[in-house]
Image (cartoon, rainbow, N blue to C red):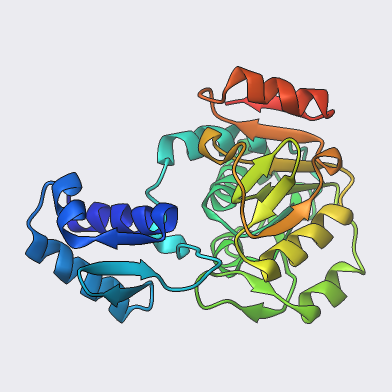
Length: 261
């Protein structure tokens, strides 16, 4: 396990348990306590955790990992999910993408689709996003029209949120929106760790004719701080093949079409 993988693992542990112990973490990750102390000091210096005597705790209640630290998590599943999602898009559509690693992968998959690069006298696709990193990556694609929602950038991610983004989204319509979420439950709906993200995502969903939730199997049945939308507001769930069949059936009972990538 290299240092990046170890830092990501420590952040995962803090996110799941709310606190970690140096000695326990050292045993789980197979390194010395001194290495864990240095890693936690590094994360604390970037305001990702708060150091305590003998360990560390999450830096805030609505804990969220910065995008660059989440990029390596569940990468094969994310790529399969994003590829399946990208196949749902037809040329000429107006597509919404919220922030997150899976949504970012969808944007990349769309940008590299051969049919999206064919000459058409105009953009093959319009992408509306509140994610600065997605806009940055797709802005160099001449066949894709990029529209950024505006708003205030969060320090822990590349997402824009707040009243400015809501004012913009009130004025547009989307053919389809892809929502990367932190949790999706048949009863409690789609959820996000941060209330600002949830609010922006909720409005994107309300402006779309079709709502597609992107969630790997580890997020199904989970819970996060703020609700994005009800399960009944979601048309399609794209997840991975490890999704529990009983949970998939529960989503289907609520009217959600489930695609296993």
